[in-house]
Image 1 (cartoon, rainbow, N blue to C red):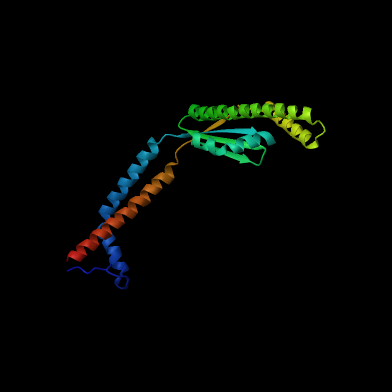
Image 2 (image 1 turned 30 degrees about the vertical axis):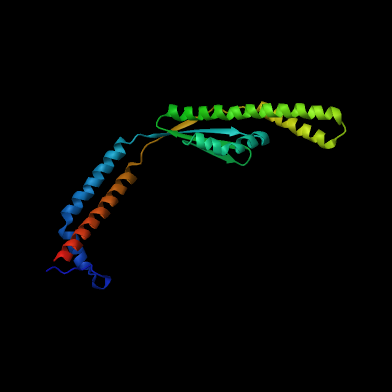
Length: 206
């Protein structure tokens, strides 16, 4: 009858533990090698990723437009990361399995964002027309004149805004060593777990 060294912590014996692993070293080596080989195959067959980056300079008006729709952009373009740096800069980072697809995603996003600029221009024009009508009625209103000045400034900012079409792309190859190392550790841990579980079951049956 075999002595179960792992029934509780009080009877734990390091020598018995090492003896169990030594007696099952072939199984541990085989299972670990299987994981390492699978990791090598995965790392060698994994396609590289391409990152495309574009930066857009903003003004106070365009910042307000894009910040308003930021969640919508992230929802419609999940493969693109959009970051606002203060109120002056918008950074767009796209990933894909080819440089063309990655750059195309940024182009599609730029087109979609430009549609919101056009909508904002129409809204500002309508606001200016409405304010002009009110000004004819009350020309001496300082508050009204301030609103007209702000709307005219927004209109100017929106019309002068242009998208930066310069997109830089870079290739990111799979990191082979971390993948293989992860496979090695996973295989080693799993094989030891299987060996100890098998030993515990056999000990209980004896």
